[in-house]
Length: 232
Image 1: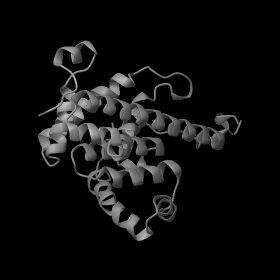
Image 2: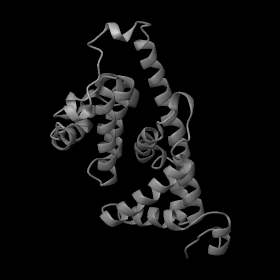
Image 3: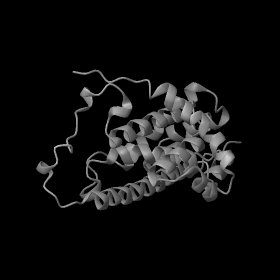
């Protein structure tokens, strides 16, 4: 007998809907089903935008909501959802209210973690680039508009990073990459870690890290590096 936790009427009055729980269960029942993956991705996107809407931040993160959502999505897929024991238990019991509650909890945790990481990265960037000099005296410090570049690697680093992360997120959603492997590359880029350092952190060999990164590197090479940006 399926335990939904509460009736549909009480669920609606509590502000819950069965959509995300049903999408999660369909995904867990058949992880290779493209329709189930797409359905869950849509529901998760809605929750991420609900928990972190545009124009939410001020201060150091102002205007960075989409960037935080992208990184939080990767973090949730690789850690906060799969590693949530309460979600695992609710899934086993097919408890719809418990599933949705834990998914929302995991989304909130991933957003908080991603925002903190981005804050630290921005502060490090400011520390490294606070020269106190007149920029007019440095003609080489001119940023070219993206439309004038012909490949991804001609773009500024921040633009490269954002596009790579967005592409990795899409690859995870479409089951083209394993979230755990993509997350390794994300952490290496964000924190400037080497393969040896990330291997020590995860408690595995450097060879294992290399093996996990191989499909991610191939995806970046095949699906991102080949993109061109027309001059206009």
